[in-house]
Amino acid sequence: MPQEVTRFPSEIYSVNLKTINHINFSRRELDILTSLLSEKETKEIAAFLSIAPRTVDNSLYNISKRINVKTRQEIIEFIKRSSELPYIQEYYMSLSLLVFFEKHLRQISKTVNTVSSTCLIIYEPKDRTISSFIQLLKKHLELLSIQSSIIALQEKQELLNYLKMQPKGYHVFLLSEAQLKQILKSEDIEKFIKDKSQHQGKLIFLIPNFREGISNNSSFQTESPINIIKSSDYYSCVLIILSHLLPGHDFCTFKNEMKEQCIRESTTLLNAGTFLNRSWLRLKIKLSKLIASFYLSKKISSFIAIGPGLCLLLVGLFSLNSQKEETMLIRSDLTVPTKNEFLERSRLIQEIHKNLKGNNSIHAIALIGCGGAGKTTLARSYANTYLHPVTWEINAETKNSLMASFEELALSLAKTENEKKL
Image (cartoon, rainbow, N blue to C red):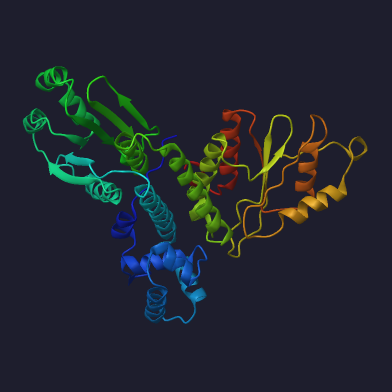
């Protein structure tokens, strides 16, 4: 399944969120409004956005006057009732990743020496779809004190002339896959690359196909001073570029930390009750797949581990619609032996329930024991004793079984045929 595109906050705002319920909001006001959904207090919002707490209070006061409410909770209800709610959620997640990314770049800048590093960003001016990409890339390189400039080259001959200048430093060419193939097929450029194997500059041809939903990220290196990078999202592109510019730094750890951040923010919004209705199904499915892929990287353990095949039992991870709709329990088939064939262990079941209560975060219980000790049966017994809106058993014995379990969960969450086709 292709990876879904992550849009920048600026793009989401300009396309979908200039107005909420037909009321205009500035970018700064939208930053503050969306932060309310994660239940952040004034000081937390200020720290998150790197602004003064007084600025947050003043903005909230002006917003409350404009939408004719008096309390912060009423502002939140105004957001939740709006038809733009899915875009507001998307905006906050995108903003959160951007803030997290830039914060870590500033931390990295304190530990690396980039005084002599330069990077030229070369692109075709005809391609207007990458303007946000280019400006952000320049900004993020400069956060690391890497001097960067943007150059527009219109024709293939211009590119050849530019390469013949033998410029020093790194050069990032933003091209489509078709444009790159056309350039590399050029006999003049191919001959130039072979003749100039000791090129003073390093060339990075970047195909930012994050807008086309390509599912894999890859970087190809050749014996020539050319590196060809394909990536399905902006942050992966930048991290691959930085791995060339700063080869001594561990950017794999950085990428894993971004995954953790995404899960933390998604979990915060789940616990805050902002997934209100079926319009959030797409995001629920995305979160399920994200957690699955993240578990495979052995970075997550916030589930119940049971059985020799290491199955996972999700209990109530996704909340039901908080609006007044017909109550429906979503459950996988959790069969247990008859009572005369297994020990009920009511004390352990009560202990599990005690530790899993509460809505502040995702709680975890690990059931540890030798094979055949009854871990799976105990977990299923708990799920059958205490009913939750969503109870699902995830088979993590293999990667395929893990993904299949999440897909079955997503289908069970779907309430219409259209939702099942997502």
